[in-house]
Amino acid sequence: MRLKLLSLSVMAMGAAALSGQALASGYNFGSQSVAAQGTAHANAAEAADPSTIYYNPAGMSELDGTQFQFGLTDVIPDSKYTDSGSSHRYLNGTTGLGLGGNQTNSSFAPSSVIAPTMYLSHKIDDKFTIGMGIFVPFGAKLGYGSNSVNRYALENISLQTINFNPSISFKLDEHNSFGFGLSAQYMKAKLQKAVDTQTGIFLYGAGLVQAGQVAQGTALMGLAPSLGDGQVTLDADGWGYGFNLGWLYKMDDHTRFGLAYRSRIRTTLDGTATWDYSGVSNVPAVQQALAASVHNTSSAHTTVDTPDSASASFYHDLTDKVAVMGTATWWGHSAMKNITINFDKSGEGAMVIQQGWKDSWTYALGMNYKYSDALLLRTGVAYEQSPVPNDNLRHVALPDSDRTWLSLGANYKFNKNNSIDFAYSYIWFKNANVNYTDSCNPTNVNSAGGSCTGNGETTKGSYKTNLQMIGLAYNYSF
Image (cartoon, rainbow, N blue to C red; front, side, top):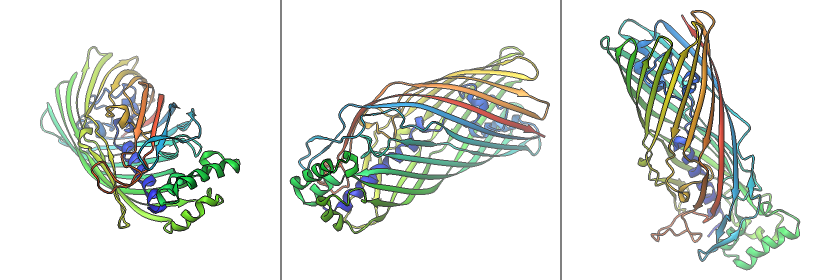
């Protein structure tokens, strides 16, 4: 076993974790419109501004003239991880070698992340309206650090996506409108992970004694356990394509119902993995193994499927001042069985991550109150299910769990052409445990006896998470 192969396995696990983030409804960015955020995204049938391109493109038929919207949403996370016995396996498959490092990470999430949205619609005639949406459907940024107990699963990750969504709506009659859109989605990812050189030497053939010498050597040098690690960095990107459909039924001027569907988008991420062993090159026991690792750079590929979704929504004016609305959204996560990472080098088994996710639902209810001709107030609540079915399938890059939204918002009109939207949301997650084990045995044999690439670490701990979201948008109509 070459140390290079173990390094690839570490990179592969990170790629899989990255893919997992992209797939989860919990890591759906959560807000594609500041106005919608103010109702906890209950207003898919309201069709009051061009962000309806995302929620239901048929709603563009309700918009007059040309309308433009640009928004910014600031996500402020507060997440804490506490370890309860993470470890990795020896060659015989037993678990128990401690990982060292920080057991509690109170700041693995960034102080804030800002994402933009932009929408434009134009009414061609009484039948047709066209539009363009540009938004961030998925995004994540986590940093556990190089001295974390989680470092073999993940040190840092950054995931950025942007979706270009040209759309058209057709008004069949006074009651029925239909919409269609195409999506071109760009995804870019960067992650860093520690490389477990101590176990790598053992697998390479230097033996348990020398593996122990590495740990002893780093201790004698006064180094933290993590400073006996290598590091792998992966940069990857790719494009994927999909579509969305919508139907809006307008019962009268006060009541609307909508159905919408957004397709799954498959993206192939192609990238480069780079390894750095400078942090362990002064440990004598690893020099022979490092010399055998002649490939410091390798190509790797993985396929990411963002889930399809289907929603049903309603909007109703109770009075001339009060409107109520609701949306139920289904997310098709169960189609994702495995994530498989393949390598260009011959003889290196693929990394297969078992997902076992389930379909999930999001339910939202909201209300508008027209305080005056200039000021509209909004509020809403929502409940989102996580697709992760149990602790064994929860990864540190996806500490996802069921969550509840509480949102407030407002729209203020300066005049008939200019207005702003504001929204604030507080989102609290159900406390979540992780007990995730790399399914590939360190001998690079999977449970079926075939070759694979794996590291065998187990991450075991618990998460407490909440988020605050602040949104501000400018609207212009002409």
